[in-house]
Length: 440
Image (cartoon, rainbow, N blue to C red; front, top):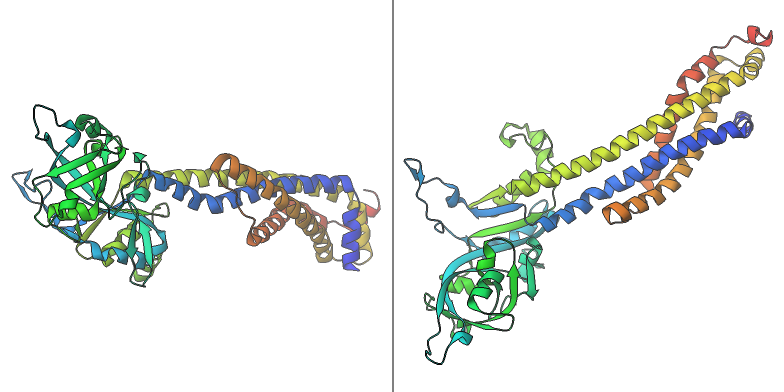
């Protein structure tokens, strides 16, 4: 009987019901779109931000120790200890190992090079120039302790480095040359460079000739350098299996006030929460725990830029959602108030026949909840379409529908409907039937 009364009441006055459902559907559509986009936009933008380059720099711990006398830093620019390349697979064993997107070790040294094509008829000697040569990985298979391998390199950590031609092979006598240096040496893609002293005695004779397979443009110091396989530069520097610094690109969660707390001042519960969150500071600590003797520093300009943009985007989405939900609540409240006034006689008659205030309130609330579920379902369907349009046009991705989002939207629709109609329903439950039936 109760369900029959609810269904009968729901089908009457269709115009008012349609207006209420339209208001709810619009609010829920905006909420669905904002929630769907917000759930995926963080990971999507974080991946896009990886095009800004690495956000963590790993160096030997000894390099961070000051050596100052009278306010002057006496540490040589390229002095310091070296780190073992064999430990790099441990990066994929930390708690947030799947958030480590790429890493590339760097080793630099000086070498004299010459262009054999510059030999003239009057002199058989090849003119030489002392340049910096940077060793790294282009696409390198890194063995992981669990027996698998991981492909990484400078292509992934520094995707903004533009190469005309191609990157070198990690085990080949090849290199890419900075565009400014290439112009100065008179080389192009397909040219050959000859290496001269200083060269470590262990260098194979075949590695004294490098084929230029690409021209590099970065807008920085690398435009005046040679970039070659790490193993080659290690042999040139006499540092086999070692590197000087490591660039790491990691997916992180935007830092908040909690992330900026000093871990040393945290309680055990807070430390566990911080350690198990993908903050860039917690990932840096985990890396330093695995790579012993290292100092892991956050490249703040990149990390803070990511956090600020993500925070602003999410804040904007939630502000729009709040405004849509508030408008829906006001529309539902106005519709409920008008409906209660129109049904004063019906409510008075129900009470005169024995219905108490609680039953009247439950009946009216059930009608509103039915309205909320229908409007929320329609809003969810419209919101999924809106989310796809927003995702494709603005953020460049298509959010996938999620079942738990539907449950959240239906719950929100019910909450908004009950909050909006709470006052009119309360007034209806307090009606005195006698004056109403007398027409007063």
